[in-house]
Length: 137
Image (cartoon, rainbow, N blue to C red; front, side, top):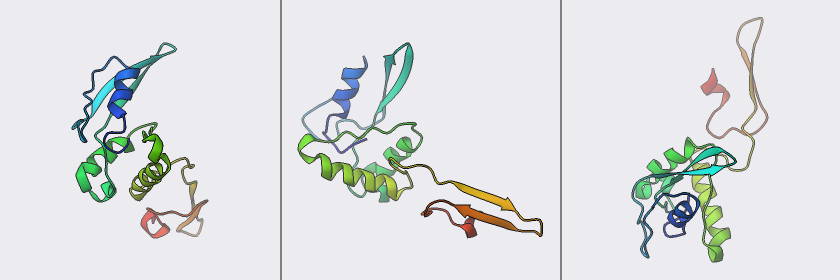
């Protein structure tokens, strides 16, 4: 995942035998392009996604569609420009966290205990941003 024109298509074409179009203008990739990387006799599917822009988590520029694909992934690789790496990584992390994708953090440890007297006791080990005790009851 990354902003437009940061090299996502070139990376996919280099790592796999897939031809993902790359050009000198933004938004060359308009749909998800799959590729397969073979590593130690394992096949790993890589996806070239259209670039996202700031505000993607709010639906700007097909951002929700792109983030929905990222949400189903086992691994998200952020591709950024070298001279803008820190700023772009921070913005991408914010966009993903705004839709509930936790980057480089453990999933929340949530437990429910059914009380003998009735009801449920709710525990969590971190601050929950998209779920609370009221919602779970």
